[in-house]
Amino acid sequence: MIVDIDVHLEYEITQPTRLLLQIEAAGHPGQHVQSQSITFGGAVDPARVKAEEGIGHRTWLLANENLVCNYRALVNVTRKKVGLETLLATPLPDLPPNVVSYLMPSRFCQSDQFQDFTAQQFGNLSDGEKVAAMVNWVNINISYVSGVSHAQTTAVETFSQGQGVCRDMAHLLIVLLRAGGFPARYVSVYSPGAVPQDFHAIVEVFLDGKWHMVDPTGMADPLSTVLIGVGRDSADVSFLMSFGPINFIAQSVKVSINQK
Image 1 (cartoon, rainbow, N blue to C red):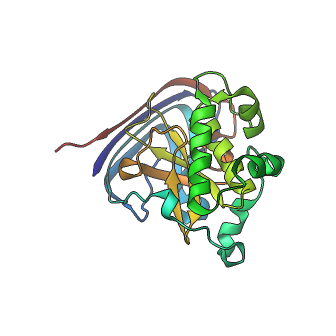
Image 2: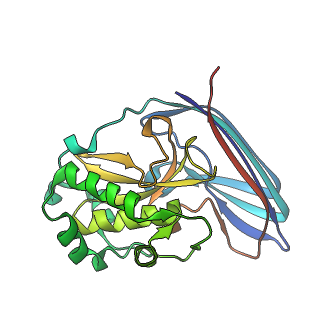
C-alpha cells in the first residue's frame, strides 16, 4: 500500500535558534520510502543524524529567520497485520538488552504506579490476550477529546481525567503494558485514518520476540501506518524541539492512500 505524506510547518523565529526536527518517514522493516523531499526556508546548516534506536532520522537546523519547512514522501507499507491474541509474551530473561529499558518508568509514563491496578484489572489474563484487553480498556475508558491536555500531561493525569488525545492514550497504554511486564514504546507515525490529521501517536509492544503496532484510539491500521520514530515516551520523539524562542504560525499534515 502506497501512502502519500504532505507536511507544512511554519514558525516565527526572533533570534538565531537551534532546532531538532523529526518528521521524516523511517526506512524500516515493513515500510519502504520510495521518494521523499524536504526543504527548510529560513534555516541553515542542516545536519541529519540517526534517531532513537537507530530508527529514522532527526535533523539539526540553525534558524536565523522564520522557519518554513515542507516535507513530501511516498512510502510503500508492506507490513502484515497480526492478531495480538495469538502472540506469546517473551520471557523477561530472554529480552534483548536494548528492549529491557522499555519496561522501566519514564518521564510521562509512571508505570510503577499502575502495578496494583494492572494486577486487579488484567491479572486473570496472559500473553497476547492480556495485551489486547489492555488496548481495549484504554479505547473504551478514555475519551478522545482535543484540547483537554498539554505537552506536560502524564499518564497518571490521563487516567484520572478519563480523556485526552492520541499522545495521552498512548502514554496510558504504555504504563499498563509495562506494569504488566510487557516492553512498550511510544511511536510517532503518519496514519491516513487519524482524525484530525496530524502527527499521530501509537504504541509498539514486544511480543514473541518482535515489536508489534497497536493503537488505543483505533484510528491507525498497521497496514497503512508509516513509522517516523520511537522512544520511551513523547519526549523522545517530538517532531520539533526548539533550543530558543519560537512561535507557531501554521502547520498542516496530510496523509492519504495513493490510488495511482
